[in-house]
Image (cartoon, rainbow, N blue to C red):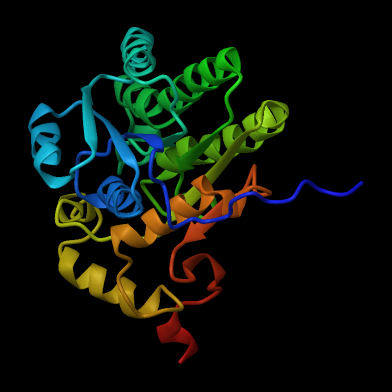
Length: 272
């Protein structure tokens, strides 16, 4: 059976596209996603629970609408998506970027810490994706979901067992929803960033080393195949590809943006 001809396969033009980015008002990966999509012409629909960050975002982008919401609760997600689809007749993509970290050995974690991590890093992804998909199906509109996972879906480290569990949950959810939603012309993919540097990471790194700056430098030189720090916009470019028509045959996939970290058997210092 002959495939349908591709009418448009231009990743460079997101003009007229409305894209939701959760946790997109900060600097890190979410900021890189916003930077890449805005440069390609997208209308950014930024969702965050930090009102000050949302206000700053309004001055950073010329095409942006901001939404203050707590997506860790069903009521918060329902109110958010009711407002989004009231404001826009068509929303083309959802990037589930919002997330929190937890650096603590699993057997020492309190139930409240576990519940908070899973509510933001996994349950919110499911709730947002579910509401987005139901809205598109009801309107008979195609769309795309891109979830931000992590290299911790491939391998992990001490104090990251539960974070790894949450991100592996995203991997499974991505594959499963891709299978279920393909018949509705909705694609679902994930991106797994490696270490993406931001100054706020140093406080978290201090939970396992007294020299966070030295750890970052050692990681850059020895734990990647490419010896450079990943910029947030590097992740944004891959997200943009997955949202674009160029990826029309790609669904249920997890693409690592990690400078080759997940391909290393031994660190570069050892091998050299």
